[in-house]
Length: 392
Image 1 (cartoon, rainbow, N blue to C red):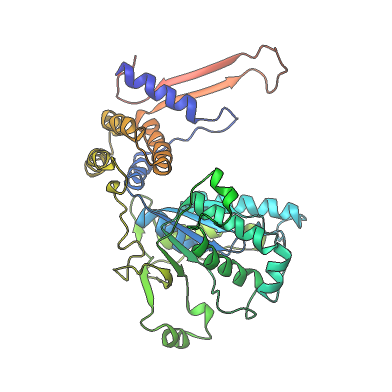
Image 2 (image 1 turned 30 degrees about the horizontal axis):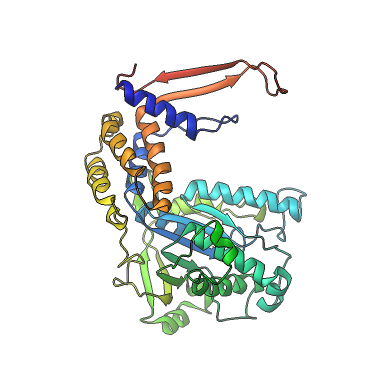
């Protein structure tokens, strides 16, 4: 166990920032959920225009039921909105809304991404929006986001086929999503990006439609009959003690400056997506259908999966530390993966799990908040082994 101690200590030292912050402490339920996500190799990206445009029900469902790595690409930071909780407007409001988005993602399990697009207020038409934004630059940002995040599935919040019928920012975000889907795999498009990332081709693109886009439920059902993929997002999470809709409502309610505060609902609720481009899913109720999301997706991943699926199947909620030897074995194998993208993601995920299972508490505190070159700063370390694993 001595070697395990030093490896875990090294992981803590290299993965934790020494800025003043509260150490992350996961309980057994949270560790298990992270093991489940570790064993899912699939990614979804949701695209819309502003903070609070995102469908937190769908993001929460993808992140917590499907266990997919899920991102929300908000083209703007919401500088043009109103502020119901303070006097900050424009750029300062954008700072507030950025933090509200990050808070929402910490709850629903998604990751947050932005472009340089400016929320300049209401726009009547996407042509006006794209002219003010500088279409090529924002398109470049969307392409960059897709190439670096590498989603298998992209979901637009808005319809790209209805210019002039709603907020120009909304339609423009969808139009850019559709255009980017066709460009991200082309090495001749935005070639300067390829010094830092690779081309990528998502498998499919959807539009997250609903009756909200129609006059009534009857019109919605008539217009979309037989065209949609649907799934029930009203699932219950026993490990959280919350339904997906309750979790989504808490996430959505983080948009305080916009007056959000959604009443929680429980029970069955369907979400609908319309297929737009790419490979159609084989199962209409599964947007990842036909996409390999197992460890066999990556070369050398089969042996890793054999270890980690066993950890998931036999997870000991009363003593997570018993899984440390297997987790360390899988960690070493992940370091050897040739696929740099998945190696980086799974390395970060398994490090967090190992740290939590070890129950090793490490905190560094300095005797002063600042210093100058050559100054002496005394640092005190608190290291406590709170697990049943013997460490020397």
